[in-house]
Image (cartoon, rainbow, N blue to C red; front, side, top):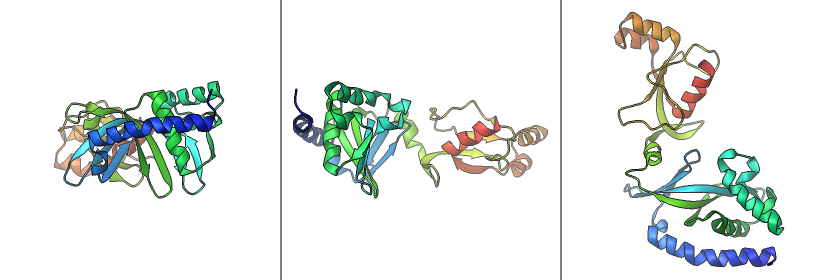
Length: 247
């Protein structure tokens, strides 16, 4: 059995030509912007001319530029990332410490080796790194998505509102009385759940019990009932936080 350094270098050497072909096929280096949704596990690469491409991904880990440490995504015990435990188990079976320790002192080169190892274990089609001021995010790309037919891509494209707490999200509308402090009831235009697929003419809409009484008094939404409700714009994540408290 190869020791870890030999093994990791071997996996990196395998990945390099595969990644080169992947980059050429999808013209990855031609995109100047990125946006990702960690709930949908989709990354969008795009240019200002609206040329774009979408990939399904598995988050692998992060490298902290400040503390110079690596952290595996499975270290957070997130069930949504349970598939990455295959990497940890492989490390335990082969006594490769860097694969089964959740976080450890590292450097930027470790990240690429760990990404290469993950590529083989989890059957990727390519890899991508997101470099921010403090963290580098390492993603394993597993599927190129059809932007016309994929429902998750449609949801991603609807994210047009920038929330100071949740970043780029889909828009939602609630009455002025709904908040995160005092339950006041929660009436919806239709039953909802997070990241549900919406038609182009649909929005997440909710109002409190008092607004529902006023709405019925005036036979629906009109100038009088809307004046009482004072509908405000929020993001989807805020909407479901409010829903959880007010139901």
